Image (cartoon, rainbow, N blue to C red):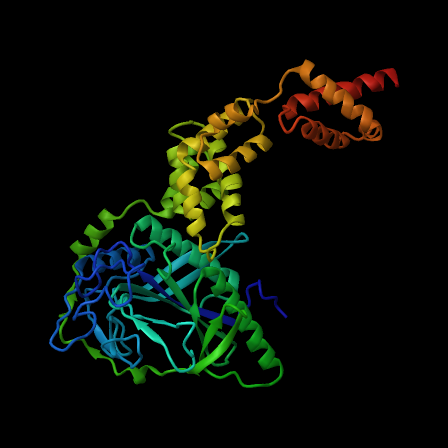
Length: 501
């Protein structure tokens, strides 16, 4: 049986991804602010987004432009005419009892269709992911549960989010493994950041539902997934669950399941709706929108540098390896930090290495978010303290031989804690590298005396020198110049070999 982490042609996974256009100032059909986060419940509303009788929606033109940008990056075709529809369903967080969307079950009305994305980081192989459609629609409100209320009987509704502009991306079921899903979502997050239309780091800004089926079995939709990490976990669990059912001869029913992130399992929610249940019909208050080839060309001309182009520039202009460039560009804030840092210290490889290896490693260890390829709340605080000048100074101090890399890593932690510049920290704690032979000689001699066996082993096995080097670094509190220490140890070994003592 194929393992979960590997591609399995019988496993078919499709995604429905909802991206809020957080760069907009107002909601999709009214003038209420698009930024609803942190506001008192039901204060960011008006008669239009609450669906009051007699109100009319007014389409946010900028939302159409942003959606077209994303559609073009995903290699979608842009129809010459797009239309909005009413999708009817009854749920407490939907104030109008219908959702205004571009999708309907009967004709193609979305802003983008038939796109493709190439995944080229799959252990040397590549895969084409087809995009069925990309559509604009309004976000519903939110259900909230008060801990003092019986959740089985009561829910609170906050309509502050209702009417916020969403782009929904619907893929074909072309993913065959959970890691492919995670890679695609990370790629999408980078695209959204570089376009400047959505900040994936914001809570709820990018949400994803996954459809999973095995072979000819019925499709199961997983909802309520809060992060990219959890999408991968949910899909992994669902594949395992369906394989277990199939192995026991139990029918897999088409249904909607929710992801329980506390127990890390999917749980049944309801039977799967059919498209006919939504009773689509054209939105009578919003005329169809005609998109000309001139409009498309104007959008193309206005787009910023995209991730793949930035990777190529980093490779060609700064001579970075392609892997390093991809890691930097994968998280826009790291790529921006890199380009700002080399203005202070023009050694691109050294600066990139500090960001990719040390800073990124630190951020990943202390990440309190969903691992979405974007900074969590604590990481945002860290990045606010670690400026381009901090990174440039760290690289310069190591490259100039004033401190070694081990000391520099300790200084990075002080930088993150205090915001002080590395040069100021070096002066305050006197961590200049010991690079004087006379000063180091006594430490080297002491280590050789204490570790006589390891030293004798080094006469025939040069790898034993690394152990002795580590001892010297410990005795010098990390201040010894490792290159000089290694040279001195080799001199002692050669001298002992000649004398036989």
